[in-house]
Image (spheres, rainbow, N blue to C red):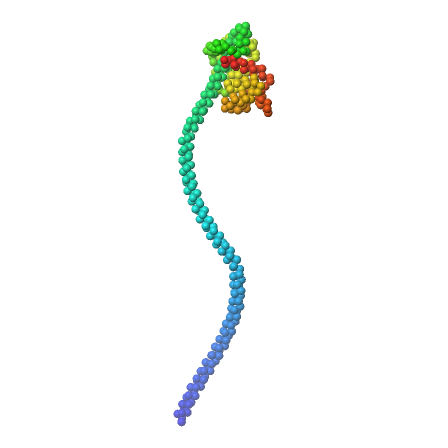
Length: 346
């Protein structure tokens, strides 16, 4: 019985210890439950905040999706434009390649044409050289013609100065009237050549230096041609040297003689046509065409020579329907000049 009591006591002590242990565990569990409740409350609170945030985020998402639709459309349009530009770029690159090939081909053709041009240019240059030579020969011919006329005028003047007064007056009709006889023309030319061979080929040096021949390619030839007349005049006796009372010297002065000998043949024919024709326009146009110039340039050249030699013009240019005409105060002198020129060139 005592053994049972001790066993019961021992069991009671064990149960008391277990109860005490369970009480302690219960207290711990209660404390843990309190902590868990507070944590659960916090989590619930966080959950509510998260729910609110998710609601806000969903609303923003919808707004962004609504606002992104135009951007997406614009992006699609830009992508389409980029694709079109890329296609155009490819086409342009293809065209550039084609143009480069065409450029190279054109460069080769240009090089070939330049070679052909160089080959054709040589005959053209030779032709230009020949034309220049022909022009130079024409100028030399005109210069020689003027020098011949000048020498013939000097020969006639010297013959008139050295001849007796009666002989001078007797020779005036011949000077004023061109000869129709071929034999007489040949005789006069022979006499002129004989006189030229005896007289040095020149005129007064002062007159030559003051008025050189504008058409002569060598300005010294006129000075060389005009030198000896003064020497011959100085070598003659004083009364003969000043025999300027002849009709030739009175009617055709030294300045007009200089003007006459400067005229080339085509300008003299122009002056003659204007002086003698009532309507010289057609004749002047034909002379200008044959001389490869224009009537205006032809008249201007004559007036320029007159301006340089005489100090004034001798031809009034065409104005309106009126043809060119000789200046009234020079008409008589011009006609005398034409007669003298024709007489000396027979």
